[in-house]
Image 1 (cartoon, rainbow, N blue to C red):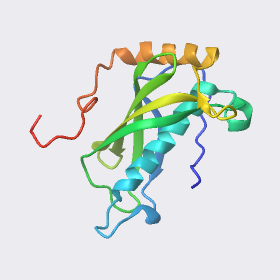
Image 2: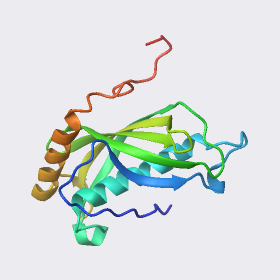
Image 3: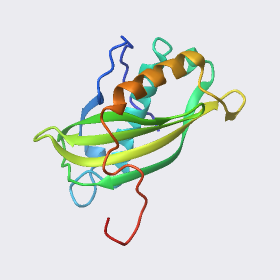
Image 4: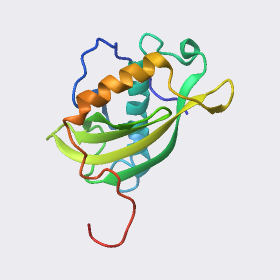
Amino acid sequence: MITETILHHWTGEIAAPLRLVDTRVKPEWIDEYQHLNMAHYLTICDQANWAFWNWVNHPAQSMDARDGHEYVIVENHVHYIGELPLDAPLYVTTQLTGLDDKRFILFHRVWDARNDSLAATNEVKSLGFNLKRRGIESWTAPVRARLDQVLVAHEALGVPEQAGQGIALKRR
């Protein structure tokens, strides 16, 4: 699988939330119900994961430039809220909601750009990972400093309503 590369330069300005992905629903993402297949909400949110990672690593925006210092996703949860048909314009907003020496949590919202309605949310826990050693590692110092800055900028947003929820049969 090839993930689209979305690159943004780090300028020190941190939007709250970030908007790093703007795209349209592609034909290959449509299912038998003629809307965006559930798996492709993750495809879209993975574009946001990569866009965020490339942004905080700027100017090292390729795996070669990062010399093996990457991340892996260890957990994620999606809430499907609205439908997106073929060719619908959409955008993703991203909020950093948690951080420690080796992990961060991103909260993505997928928006239907036709009417700015929420189509889905995706909460993602990532872990620092060294591809050369094939093991867990702490964030590099420059990345950790930027993650700290983003977390401070995003704290004013509060905790998203859907954050931290698992799957249950009872009403919340």
